[in-house]
Amino acid sequence: MNGTAEDPWGRVADDGTVYVRTDTGERAIGSWQVGDPEGALTFFRRKYDAIALEVDLLASRVESGILAPDEAQSALRRERRNLENAQAIGDLAALAARLDALEAVIADRRAERRVERKRQVEEAREAKAAIAAEAETLSAGSDWRHGVGRFRELLDQWKALPRLDKATDDELWRRFSSARTAYTRRRKQHFSELNVRREDARQAKEEIAAEAESLADSTDWGRGTTQYRELMQRWKAAGPAARDVEDQLWKRFRAAQDRFFNARNATYAEQEAEFQVNLEQKEALLVEAEALLPVRDHRVAREAYRGLLQRWDEIGRVPRASVRAVEGRLRKVEDAIRSAESNEWRRTNPETRARANDTLTQLRNSIADLERELAKQQETGNAAGVRQAEEALNARRAWLAEVEKTLDEFSS
Image (cartoon, rainbow, N blue to C red; front, side, top):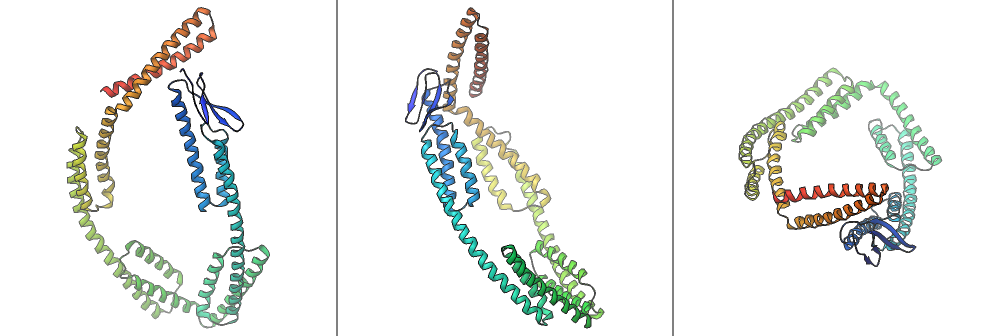
């Protein structure tokens, strides 16, 4: 390569070395041995643009609050490392200054989060104190039917709140836990006198039967099936109630379950018949689509395929077991058409051909220079110079072979 090139932020020396200008002086960032020096500047300016884009994106995410302060700080450190040894030409100092400005933004975000955390902790302390007070009120009462559910709700509320400092959190938890334990002990004693096991089983199974009946006319088949399975598990876990009550509740549960599953099975049967018809129609379309192969005229094939695809979408769904097979066959046709389009574009692209011809000329000139250099080194008996020239010559010849192969493909 001969010649130099410069811009305000860098330059290309006569020997091909590329420099960037910084506040502390010039720094070598690469070497450009083949091609126009202006091309080197363009290449390294684009690398600068890529870094600047990353900084812009980071700034946007930090300033919008999308990133948490710790994540933002980590990303900022990463961008600083990228910038320190950046092999790019541009105003690197401006990017560094922008990263410096983001430090202050992150610090502000941290301060805001500390204030917010303090507010949340105070609200959590008040909420947990209220939970403990209500638990103590419940524990002193005798609401055996609703108290258990309310304690469960209070426990869920407690779990959803953030932790406080250890001493405060432990003290409030001891109040809540002690109240719940005392309530549970008194409740068990009460129901042991009233045949608690059978009464609990009756209540649980009445709830299960009611839930089953509320699901009986649902058409959400997947969710309904899961819920009925869970209801059956709960039924088994509830234990036996009095025999006459048990039989009555079981009939209610089983009738609701049968109504749901009979409707589900009938719907599935209708869908399966419809999907099978759709499958036959799509298989017929596949025959038409596959007749487009091999692709001889990609424009004609694409137009025909577009019409087939519209008809395909209008047909609707097919049985699940057949989806992969029919979609796979259709995808093969699409891939073949896309490949034909790509090949035609690559073959007829004049810019690509021109660039390959320019590269070919440059390589041939470089090889001629290296051959003369090799002869010179051989004449002087410089073994190291001969080896270096041969290595460079072999690399250029290999590159030339690849470029010539590419041009042959353009001509085919």
